[in-house]
Image (tube, helix red, strand yellow):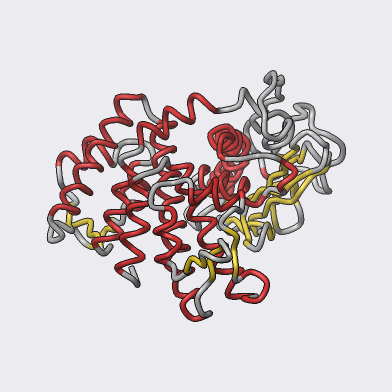
Length: 387
């Protein structure tokens, strides 16, 4: 980390609060720096009595120390914190933002391992990862794990999401080993979050809403309610390229399922379309330009990023909210928990949706996109067979 004092303060903050409280505190610290750097006259002074400051930062052990380590000073007479100069603010914001992203990625990876595996598999993967990171924290020279390590290949990598967890803890494969290039303070921060895995799983199980209904993740924001009966996408069946019809799909599919795929044959291509149940319309997902077996995704802009898959979410008011999900060139879906967290953070305040919805939204994403990915894979196989 850029500043040892700031790094220690942030590490102590992560060690003394829940994962959810840490996420809120890091977000606030970054926002305070960004706002003050953009307009010091307007945002350079923050009252100590501020409700957000008290609930999300000062109420935590080491919260005040973290704010002071960012460069803010306490004006006792004004009972307010005063921001430092712009250059200090921007440097501090970069450190806080980097840790915020690392923390979010690790929490998402922990959540995915707990959600996708049997409890004993998830616990085994977590305990091994905890041992690796604890060893590194105790001895900074232990930065590598042999790629042929028996425990690694028996307990961590075979677990669904295990490789992502290893990466989120700073290990990257280089040749025949996994190496960690994080500095000591970053390792300390990652270890503080990793130690909360069981608490994260327990919190999600206790707080998860009953369900979301409609669209990709519809229903009333900020609360549960009765699960709704949802239509399931129908499989496409055997694909015969010469039998595919031209023209765009018209009307709702028989299944009425959100993201129900359909195929359209054009002169020199085959397109994949998907039904958007919230806005009641078809969208073009992408196409194969025959005879190529390379699928060209119709990437769409969502909250500043371009994503291969576009879903719509209805939080209960009938208004579609966009949700983007990435697909790698190799056809691998991005971590659905990362996509779900991105959606939650970008949702409007009036939606009243928070991380209690993370697991539910992630599961809905996985359920919605799988039929589309299956259709693309099935169509590719049909083209390869014809070629």
